[in-house]
Image (cartoon, rainbow, N blue to C red):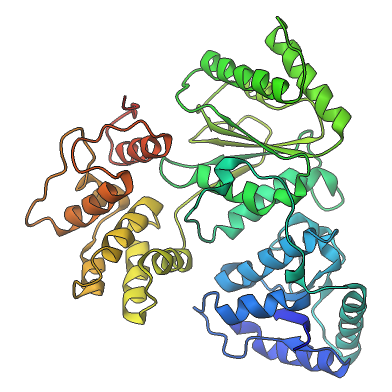
Length: 459
């Protein structure tokens, strides 16, 4: 079967307008894929994955409702990243924007592009079809034919459980690249994004996912600088400069007894000489650091794009901030389906109710989903999901992690459910004494959520 020429991406509420657009594309001799069974709450299916990989161009009918549909965001992100591996993604992704402005469009490259407005006449439709036909003729291969060759950090190769967060991923990407496209975005002095959110919401996971998905935009590679365990300006800078010495050695630079400031400048000069953009993730930045310290964390070179993750603060620092909240209902159901291996409509309806009650907190959803996956023989899965009541803090408080062995308590179905899952995550049956960084992050996140004060690192 020959590839599709164009993949039509749209929301269920824009079907009437898309029908006319599809007719114009077909009249231009283009082979069109569109999901005719589209539903308001549909997720990503194998049919969509296959059709997008076989298509040469994605045409997005980008109404204000478009960013709210999970499948639309997956389609756009997948097509953009595939097109990016072939060069300029705007040669493979085209937007029709029926709205009076483009404030809802992401990423920044598409907002900056000359998108089409709402087609009101047959001539408008024909112009769109002609432009798509030009893009198809210029595309040698379908979107799924080009694979990534970008280098990967070992931490990005490990298995990860991550769903959605497309809005936040695009916000990070747009912040890092806004400087390149100043026509439609405010000009910034540094390519920088701050990912901010409470404990356990997935700031590190979001940064990892961005580094993994968008790695082709950074041919110079990705570097990860972890400030975990520092809680003051001096400690943060000491850890940062220790990372810089390691990076300098990796670049083949002789730092000798140079000062931290000299090492920083030396690393920047080496990066400038290589002329390849890099992504630096500075993870677990202590909250409320002075602006002067934060400035020190940003390398003085245009070839480094920086993502900082932190819990709070920095209102006076001139950097774009991506505030991380809980998962949406669509993301929560996708996470449950992936972990529990079930797409039963009754269960998914119960999951959506759970997402709303716990504010979409990833730890609660992951823990509950894992526990139910391990108890697939039990009956009444939907009832078990509905038994999980209260906020994220309420749920986790009933399953608080302590140094004592995890005990089972009758009459606490919620606590038992989550406790079982967290024990499974940590891989322990007795005292929670762990050295693994990931496990420590989970412990600290849970302790912070349930109000145990400042989280301390276990030995």
